[in-house]
Length: 260
Image (cartoon, rainbow, N blue to C red):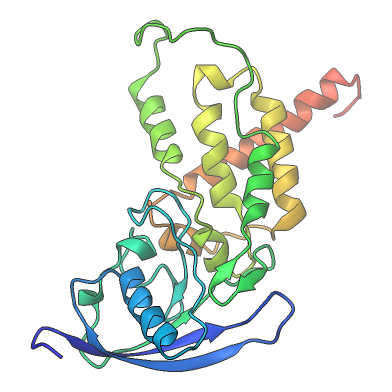
């Protein structure tokens, strides 16, 4: 072990499959560099397990740059770990002291069934996007950038919402297992811009209805905002609720129904 290395103990959730019983297992790593990312530390653990003929720990990852949303585990009870506005793949071991004990679990939510170990099935988020998180209106070739005037505040808000990487930390952090922050971000970045207006109301109803099929309801704990690696604001949930109510009223008008 070099002078700059750390000794780390990790307690990791192990589960061989969706229907199998799971439990925690303890491991010790004697040569962890402070410059390692958290995922590199898990890679090191898996190399040691493989060398011993043991099953490596399954976990989700892809870009390792905080932009794809694939990574995500609960570290010492906090989705993505202790560093605010930081995805698991961007967390570095220098955040921890020599001799630290780290407990690692998968995202816990009814909408995220466990595949294996730390890997969960987050395809329910895809079902929400499939319900309306896109624009189908043909737009032709790219217009001049200044052809459609958009107030800067609106453009900034849409960009803030579009920062969502769909990791699911908001769901894992919510005591209700709600996905309102994810859904509201995906709605807002389309509903705020001119290109999204043609399908705004159908999109709002369809995506929220799909969300409620898989996830719990928001009761304003705001844990989602605190856990989000991109700092998505709960203000977007207010916009979601507003657009959902408006959309239902508009649909009732179009259906010719009477209402007070």
